[in-house]
Length: 295
Image (cartoon, rainbow, N blue to C red; front, side):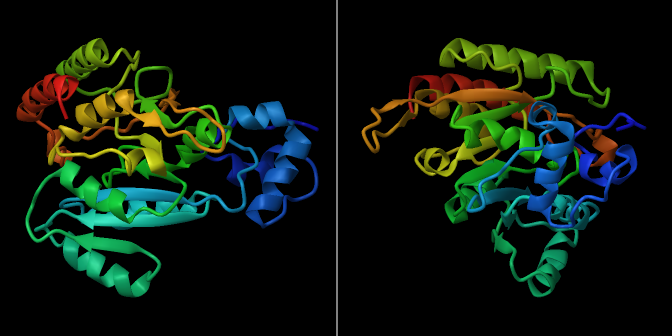
């Protein structure tokens, strides 16, 4: 076997035809996984996010949407390309740039989508609450609609839950993956907010504000969320830290197990449509303290 290129989980399925001098891999996703494990070995495959996913697993992808007409179709294409059985839930938070018209067309073109519409703009947290309530998959992940995060990383993000090691997985932009270089003060603010949150929750996260948060469905639907805007991030973190998995099948009740996985980040600047600002940072400070003390 001759290796012709270095590849990662982002494009491993696509380049395998070129990197291995052997028979062509099967077209079926599950047979392809077995073929890759056979030729590359289970240890290496797990490192790049290739492993056996239960046939009955459904991943609910919750996408809050607000004024994303430029990227909404593209992000859906990327989400659909991930070889995992999915329930895709989009919640339009009263877009005014034509995004809502696109979603109306998508309802006809792609009837398997679950689409909800808010009758007024309420914020990311409110959109996520609507989406979480509609989730039916065993695992639920948050996906922004702006192409800053890569859905190709779903397999690695859900692996600790599938293996029974975690109940919640946070991505992190600060522990080893590639990221676009943007604003120093935003980075500093994120790290400060994470540190303050950790002080109250006794978790040792490195990126509390990250988009990619993955939950067992019983965890996220067992938490009562109240924040309408970007206060969702510190609120859900505080409540995950307190959440106790119920006793089931002889297993005693226990605290929620939280893992953290590196994720890449292609951040936008304000000219490209970035929406979070300094007021959201102030609200995050308030939410960290509020939800540390009371629900």
